[in-house]
Amino acid sequence: MLLLITKKVLLAFSTVIAVIVLSGILIHVVPGDPVTAMMAQSVTATPEVMAQMRARLGLDLPVWHQVALYLWHVLQGDLGTTIRGNEPVATLLLQRLPNTFALAVAGLAIALAIGIPLGFLAAINRGKLADTAVMVVAVLGVSIPGFWLGLIMIELFSLKLGWLPVAGTDWRNIILPALTLGLTYCALVARMTRSALVEVLAEDYIRTARARGLREHQVLLVHALKPALISIVTVVGLVFAYLLGGQVIVENVFSWNGIGRLAVQAMLERDYPMIQGFIVVFATSVVIVSMLIDILYGFLDPRMRQR
Image (cartoon, rainbow, N blue to C red; front, top):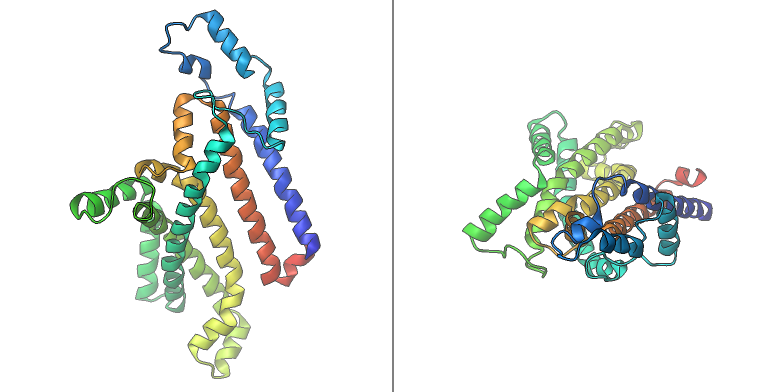
């Protein structure tokens, strides 16, 4: 088990390094100049002043040199400073990160609370009306864009019924964005849970358990649940990763002060350090979650420890 954990940690570290390097390269491929965007309305934006600004920000260096310097600083915990405001990127992201994780966890809880029971219902009623109904709901859930569902939530629960606030960052404000994310991704959870259980329920030992006269709930909870948990854990990891990335638009729809909203603002302002910092934090979060899921596999399935 220790060998598995060591391999996963080394793989996670190398993945984060690769993401930092690639993000540093790709972000300079995108057309546009942050200095031009920053000084567009300045009366002192002469070519000399703009050249001095590029030199101060290190934007006059070759791309490989900028990437190498950024990687060195990141490894020391320094994500740079914002172009606008000259504030530490790490500080701004760490201030918003708890809000993003809180929303992701709330959305994940709703997705699991709805999706897993629906997946169980569809699996034990395979080929029946309940199975068809769940799959129709799953297809609709996957097809509906999160931002559109969020706008419908605001229209219904905030503007018409007046039950919940439109925007903000407290416990009441988290309900609508969490519901939006949870309803969007519960469809994926339901489909994956159904597929995992259908596969497990077709195994010989399940037929043997039923032949011994065990009740259906005993077969499901005692014999089928643990093997299916491996696939369900995969779903949890995938959904959580999707939530961290997919809630960028939802955060902006509900004015939720997370790192996704900060990232969109940075993109509009061409703030390279903030955009790179967001990519690094987001990628690191996803890699850590994936690593923990892989390690959890080792506890659920002993065969994984030999890989």
